[in-house]
Image 1 (cartoon, rainbow, N blue to C red):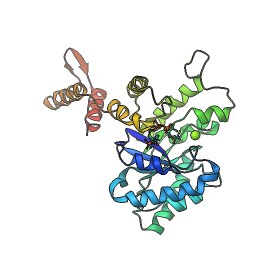
Image 2: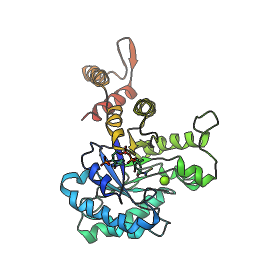
Image 3: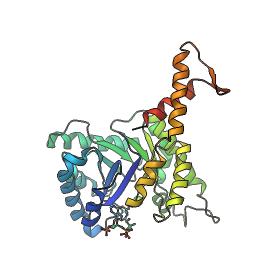
Length: 289
Ligand code: COA
Ligand code: MG
C-alpha cells in the first residue's frame, strides 16, 4: 500500500469532504477525533460512512477513518458505523501498544464478517507515540503485527499527556522526548516491516518550509507524511518520490550486482558497494510508480 501522503479531512465538513475528492493524496483520513467537536461526533460518523459508501468504487483503496481512541467510549460506535465496504483502513489515535492494534483487529474481524467484507482487508495505521504509556511500550512493535500497514507519530498529544508547556525548546527545536518519538516511530515501523509516516507540518501556508522538512524526513527513513491541508499534498508526494537521478543510480547498482552475481562487494564510480546498498537500491526502485 502506497502511503506517501495521507490527507486529514474533518468528517463533519461537507465542504472539505467534497474538496478532498479531487486530491492526489495517496490516502484520505476522514477524521472523527480531534478535528471534530464533541457535539458533532454522531453527525461526523454518519457522514464518514456515507462518504465511504458513495466513493467505494472510485477511491476505495485510499479511504481511511481516524476513530476516537479505544478508551474514549466512542470507538465502538465509530467502528460499528464506518466499517462498510470501501473502507481501506482505520487510523488509531492514542494507541498505547501493539496490543491495542491487535484488539482493534479483533473488532474488525467481526465487523468485516457482518458486512461481507474480505476478512483482514481493513488495515490499521496507529498514531504510535501520543501517550506516555505508548512511548514506554514501543518495544511491543518489535515484530510483525496483523493488519498493520504503516505507523505515524505525533508530538502534540504527547506533550499534553506529559503536562509539558511546549514540545519545543526555547530556541525552537523539538525537545528530546519528541525527537525520541520520531526515532522510535522509524525503528518500530522498520521492525514491523511497514512504512513510517511522518507527522504533520502545521504551517500549511509555508510550502518551502514543508518541502525542506520533508527532505529531512525522507533522509531519515520516513516514506510519507500526514497532510492537514490540500495544498500540502503535491509537495509531499514529490518529496517522497525518488528523483530521476536517484532512480538512475539505483538501476546502475542493481545492474552492477546482476553483472557480477558471485560478488558480495564491488565498486561503482570508485565507491565500495555491498548488500545494504543493493537493498537500498531495490527499495528506491520499488517506490517508483
Ligand atoms: N481537507 C479538504 N479540504 C480542505 C482541507 C482539508 N484538510 N483544509 C482546507 N480545505 C478546503 C477548504 O474548505 C477550502 O475549500 P473551499 O475553497 O471550497 O472553501 C479550501 O480547502 C481552502 O482552505 P483554506 O481557506 O486555505 O483553509 P481553511 O482556513 O478553510 O482551513 C484548516 C484551515 C487548518 C482548518 C483546515 O485545513 C483543516 O481543517 N485541516 C484539517 C485539520 C484536521 O483534520 N486535523 C486533525 C489532524 S491533526
Ligand atoms: Mg490529536
